[in-house]
Image (cartoon, rainbow, N blue to C red; front, side, top):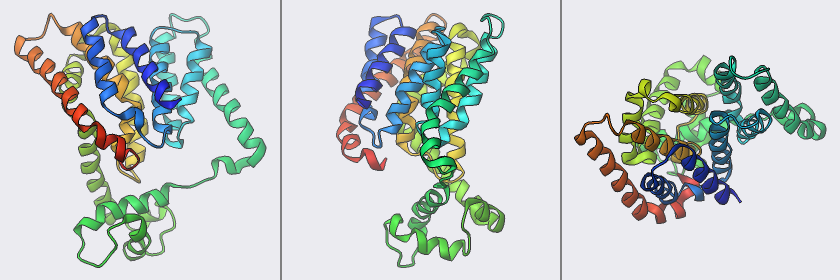
Length: 311
């Protein structure tokens, strides 16, 4: 179900923003060969399906009640996505405030859907449904992952086994992320620096040479007309979901799965819109990047399929 939703939603977005048949085929091949439809846990690709459809719904002005449900569903796929919902809703409202009657319904309906979808959990578990705290456990394992390659001490190379011992040595008595930041600011800043490098590396590994079309589109953002709003949606969603996670983990390759279809679709749509303005050399570089990425991903597909849970 998750895989089907991911591929169908990608196709909907591609057909919405890309008109040229060859560009549509290229975008579908990029999404299909990426292997992101196989990512585990499937919460990432379910979130990707809902976010991709929300971008289409908000841009093409689908009924507000449906588009707001898609945004609320995305927000509740993982706890850190909930932070993105109000910012995306406000950006959506800002675009529609002068063209849509009763545009105030946008943030209200998003909040209503989130409340309704959480209501069964509150009914069964009370406040415990949002009282969980995985941030410190996630920080421990990710700190160990970054820490282990630089040590000569006899720690197990498995961060899941070594995390407790490392945390007791480096952050004694810390019981939460707040304790780490307050009591041990220097080691925490070291973690943020290493985490940033690893995150940038993983983002580049997820996009490969599609960084070229993406950057070409972003550089020409002001000339893209109707594509600017969906690009802003992706940018806000990435900032609101990846940066908070970076504070206690690093960005895994699989974290990019939820944004990949929208990045690919809008990058190729941007190239389509800019085709007459780009220099021949620039256009050739972008077309080469697309072709090489498809071939690269095709050969890399078995590795993604077999290691998806660990990416």
